[in-house]
Amino acid sequence: MLNAAENMVKANTPKISIIIVTYNAAETLQACLDSIYSQKYPALEIVVIDGQSTDGTVKILAENNDRLAYWKSEKDAGIYDAMNKGIKHITGGWIYFLGADDVLFEDFTNLAYELKDETTIYYGRVMTLGGPTIPVNEYGFAKYGLCHQAMIYPKAVFDNYQFNTRYPISADYALNMELYNSGAFRFEFRDHLVANFNQTGVSSTSTDKVFEADRSRLVRKYFGPKLWLRFLFWRFKKNLKKK
Figure 1 (cartoon, rainbow, N blue to C red):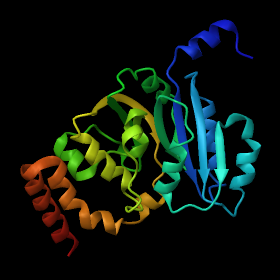
Figure 2 (figure 1 turned 90 degrees about the vertical axis):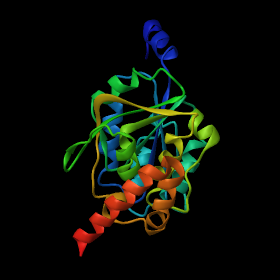
Figure 3 (figure 1 turned 180 degrees about the vertical axis):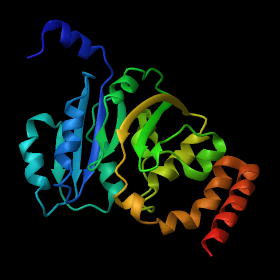
């Protein structure tokens, strides 16, 4: 039971909705959920959209039912279709997407307390196999994008946008490119190590061929001809090294 002081703090703290998309994630899901439960930020809700798992994922969700704001297991059309579904069930003013095989660090709470401007997309660092990610400049953003697990979006983003399910693996990258120079939102780095990004998921082990075919066009559209030419030269050199 929360006392009156704790209730007041929670009422005056912006709620963050954490969306987790799952499919046969029984081996990692409970650790992911536990990392959220351990956060000291008082206003978190968890929404889980499961793609009709056939392992023990649904059983884990049922066992955590009283700690989840919403969950459902049903067929979907992929990762981003499930994320778009999840967005429809959130009640928070901020949205964070976490992989079922990822875990939050304590520093997530510190980033959460710095959410102030609802036209700003805040991002921190995440731990990868290569070490912590770094902040990027405009050219770095065009080349590499940002790790999804580093970012907390204001809900206003998804009042006007959704993930393009045409891109089965990189729809978050495509959306962030559009947002970067939208004029409506800006990206701001805060130096907090917020999560461990487990690089065994589909986004790390597969290539989004549809997105890669469109990538050059998207860079030119959202970042202009100068950065586009730099991008083309970088990609040319990268492809040479592969030969």
